[in-house]
Image 1 (cartoon, one colour):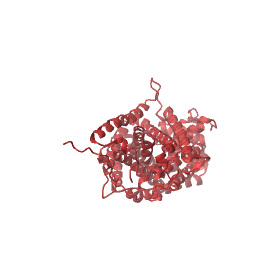
Image 2 (cartoon, one colour; image 1 turned 90 degrees about the horizontal axis):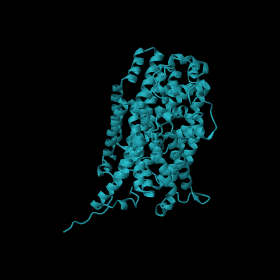
Image 3 (cartoon, one colour; image 1 turned 135 degrees about the vertical axis):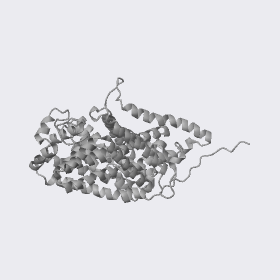
Image 4 (cartoon, one colour; image 1 turned 90 degrees about the vertical axis):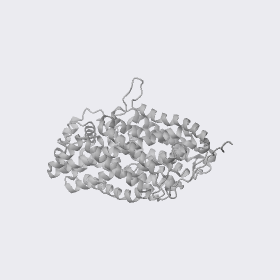
Length: 545
């Protein structure tokens, strides 16, 4: 007798709605991390955009993000309050063979980031400049030697980075509430203490005192650094032309895009409320934008925009014009705060804030990359192990461990083959922007999926008879596709090297990354059909909570 064919049956997720709206908002904010936004926005704009300005760039980015991407994420997350809501949106509205490759790009970008936190942020942003500054302020040559040792020897970076990842692994497994609340809240408070200390130092310092400290900490003068940078490509006045404005806005996307908690929309209480979603995403974007604008305005008053252009560029390229051990442009502003402190204890506070900056990325990052694997497995695209949830901790342990292994491999690559670091750093941004742009396209098309649209809490949100989600989706798609183009074809940020075919070299990495799940989808679909599981039926419905 022939065996009875299997039918599609989906188990409950095992995940728990244990996040409050405040947990959700803080996690959304720390998908960006305020201190990192302050440090990194000038890194992109002042290096890559002649005539660009970080204040103008982040303000325009905030406007585009709020009225485009953020509201789009808020509305889709409320419509599909599930784990990896953006993937659910794309796979149900567009097609699974689009949604899976798109979210694989998102996963790849964030797992790259996870590997960068213990090296690029923990060691190079926090430890090295802080130890050097503390040694300089106290005359302790041992601290200066330690900073130079970390700069020159990759082994301690690998060891410290591995310890960092293991610590974060344990926290992630221990439970979502532990990760998002018990762990995230204290480090966020410490980071904000350092931010306000930094702003206070810049606000209370005179230009004369700032210039006086420069030779001690930089081995050069303000005038010497500006003079050495006079021929830099980006050393031109602020321009009001379309490209400098919009290119700066594109590079500012990473600082204003506070919608990352949407990947755990299925684990937050009131997740189906669009107003809660929007509030939890918009307020952090405005806060970060204000903090960045205030910081840059104060620095302009102390030394001028030309100085900030020069010191950011020279930090990035490792020029002898700046004698301090600064390894990339994102280190420049935190180091200027350490210099302005000129006091061991104040510098220690800033160091703790910078360490917490690296740690603050961890909750949102773990939630994004683990819920992606979980959602794919829940849709039977990956083995069932990836969607198994611990009864004790309510976390997908197999998914967490797998991401840890991938991040550790990438950490080893970035530590011993630093020449690839810059390209992968930008690849991580570019891959996420592609996925975000496709999510916005899916959102704009959502009203055409009548059965799904009728269940949406925002179906009656309209302007002049047009669904708001269509308007924001179009704005978000335009903005993010523009950002993809700027990131992809800007050689100054280490990504835009062109091949003989006229395509940036690293673009092939993104093409392969998206092609693998595209091909796998059809293989998995055929395999599941032989098991009696109809993949098409899975994607014709929204996963249960």
